[in-house]
Amino acid sequence: MRHKILTAACLAAGLALVTGCSAATPAGGAKGGSSLTYLTFETPSLTASFWDSSIANAEKKVPGLTVKKLVAPSTDRDAYAKQLQASGQFPDLLQSITPSTFATAGLLKPYDQSWVDANFLLPLGNAYKGKVYIPPTNSQIIPEVFYNKKLFAKAGLTAAPKTWAEFMADCAKLKAAGVTPIELGGGDPFSASMPLVGILSADILGKDPNWLQERYAGKVHFTDANVETAVAKYRTMVKNGYFETGALGVKYADSITNFTAGKTAMYMMGSWFLGSVPKANAADFGAFLTPTADGSLVVPFAVGGSMAISAKTADPAKATAFAQAWSLDPNNYKTLIEGDGAFPMLKGKTLADYNVNVTQVFKDSYSYVTSQNTKVSALGWATNDDSMPSGLNDAFYAASQALFTSDDVHGQMAKLDAAWDSATK
Image 1 (cartoon, rainbow, N blue to C red):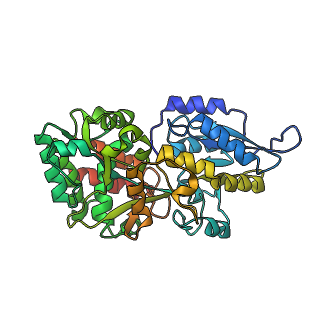
Image 2 (image 1 turned 45 degrees about the vertical axis):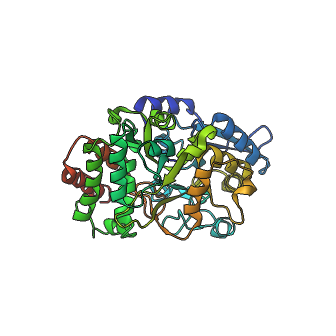
Image 3 (image 1 turned 30 degrees about the vertical axis):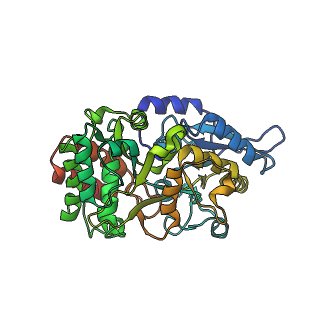
């Protein structure tokens, strides 16, 4: 998952840690082997121990290689990688970055397409300009609407809503029953944007899957009437009091705790939340997609991946061998599935092959991935040609937070159009 929170202080601290380690330097080991740097990140699920063991396992497949782990000081790997690149320390390997941000500058080495074709269900799922820069190892739905079945029952609700009108009616019933309808971690920009990601992916991309490409071509705009009408749905949710009091100050981590503790009935979040569903009462939770006006299903889909390879690495052969070994290691998938809610995308595998213990809500969510349905790029989360221009995610997050307190939908959408035009000049 790609969360965008980074401070200058963190950047300075992180850069200090790697001073003197140039990714382009073929620093040999004691026996003349290669030493490469690998930019990762840490979360409560993907811990330091996970990265250390996964690196060690992949190193065993590449004799003569030592990999030095670099940990991004926040979850914004793209920004940190840019800082490293600017100081001449661009890593040899980079985990879960946005390829378009770096490929256009000639900083990434594409994978051999025959290897990608042989191993993954959607070989071109995250391809950028026809080339694969990160193996399409997993996928996410961003967002799903998770719900607490017990709180639904308290309000007399027996099933998940199928249409937007039913969704709004359910919110009203929950509020009338003294239950906060929807959790919103509005204090973290990416988390604040989740309702808008769901609404726009369903209403705009669901009807026009090529909308983002048309925006690049200047044929459509955020200020178009259909987009502003969709965004107005979010304003209705806010004004009707369907989010908790003070939602704009709730941090992402606290939003997870609030929802799993039963303080709110629903939570619009990426499917990585599945890793946080409490096992002890997992049967109390369900999930559905952001409802559309006519009840049609639109899956806001993002094909993620493992690591990108620097085009400047001193040992491209060993870097590639390590990246391929890591990307195919079933032990890594087990952790990603159970802890981070990732949907695996390896060919010829079922969930049982990964020896995982997952909840029913995970299985139900994964069925959206494996079923034939309308899948569109999750707005702002695609790593393929539908990825937004550099900087646009931050502008979108800012608009999401601003629209929590402002009725100026047109003004915020105009800012997004201006930011887009500036970024693509």
